[in-house]
Amino acid sequence: MAEEIRARVTRRLATIALPVAGVSLALWLELLAAASFPMLSLTPFSLAVAISAWYGGFLGGATALLLSALGIDYFLLEPGTLLTLESPRQAFTFSVYVAGWLTFCAMAGRAYRRMLHDGQARLDAERVARQSDRLAQLTAALGQARTPAAVMDATV
Image 1: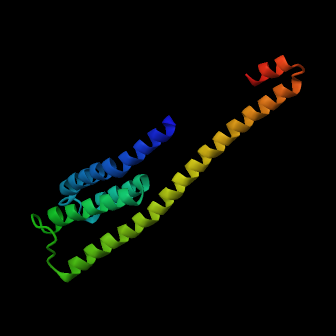
Image 2: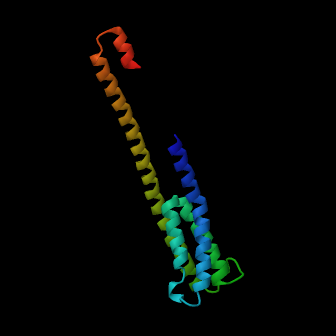
């Protein structure tokens, strides 16, 4: 029971905190490296979205993508403005970036749900195996009991 609660809290943390921290770090790195390394443009944001989607599923990835898109638009494309793109080419490029990473988030979300389902199936199988082992032990003990008192001792 405690393991399930711990897993649920960890998933919630990954879904909420990881995208915020990842995109904040990515924005900081992007602002530092934008002038020096223009070829690596948007790489930190892409990594933040990918990591958030992997550990937080679709919701974590979509949260990181939304924050990344807002950060890219507000700080990099047209500093100080929000959702103001200077050309149709820039709008198309930005849309392709968002659509591509949204597709990745959907695929990673599916893999994340499958991973959660597999983990739950493993926990259920372990629980059934423990119960089966206890039942086998009880059956063996009852098989050796010869008197009513011995049966009572075997069941306790």
